[in-house]
Amino acid sequence: MPELPDIVVYIEAMEKRILAHRLEHVRIASPFLLRTATPPLASAEGRGVVRLRRLGKRICIGLDNDIWLVLHLMIAGRLHWKKRDAKLSPPRGLAAFDFDNGTLLWTEAGSQKRASLHLVAGEDGLAALDPGGIEVMESDLARFAAALTSANHTLKRALTDPRLFSGIGNAYSDEILFEARLSPLALTQKLKPEEIERLYAAVRKSLSEWTERLRKESGEEFPEKVTAFRPGMAVHGRYKEACPRCRAKIQRIRYAANETNYCPNCQTGGKLLADRALSRLLRDDWPRTPEEMEMYTRERK
Ligand SMILES: [Zn+2]
Image 1 (cartoon, rainbow, N blue to C red):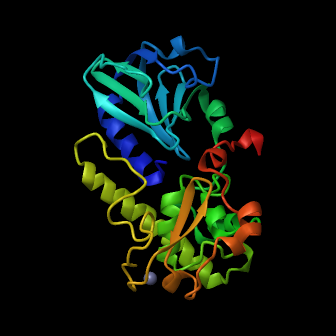
Image 2: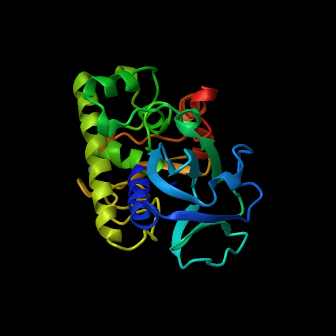
């Protein structure tokens, strides 16, 4: 699922192309995509784009009548910048936003259509879609520690909970925990102050370094290689490969269709976290499926 670094780079690429341009027409191919009935889709057409912003892992396009298009790509949704009136081919093609200077095409791979589009009015409409997690890049250590220890969760769950932290998912949480040398199963309320400080620094370092890296990679192009498995990641997607720090074999914990990767030497004191022994944690305090985690909004909390 595109996370904070990917979303930031998408938004920057969109700003260069659609800011101050007019959204002339919206074509929607998938009947499951649009999740709101009011305001109507027609209220977005013929309007100028005045602002773009990120809300957790969502991309928000603000129009000159204070209507916002809120795009959630979920796992397999991707955006593409094409020539005006580019062909929209279902089932992969979900929607096309035709601007006066080109078309933003939205696709989703796979048969499970999870991506969603909401149309909302004003800041209140946006706030209702906000799960409420803090922006770590804009938070000091005290605020970070307060969010982290607000309940006793495994670190993996806490970091990926959009009600606690904004924009962090399965991939970057693995990288952050590796950077912080902490176990994905460590419990937030058992952490020592220096461990919390290390984690805080690791979140900021990982997110800012990856954002910078992805920004450089796409350059002036529209980001077309968005993936959760990046060459250069230390542990995420590296099961059985050598840890870049100590050469130990990267391990995994599997759950649902997902897995968490970690270095047993750097993060868990040499211990392998056997799937079997984790049954209780996996049941009670592990991230649900990424889709489920993304269903949290302020309203439903
Ligand atoms: Zn290691």
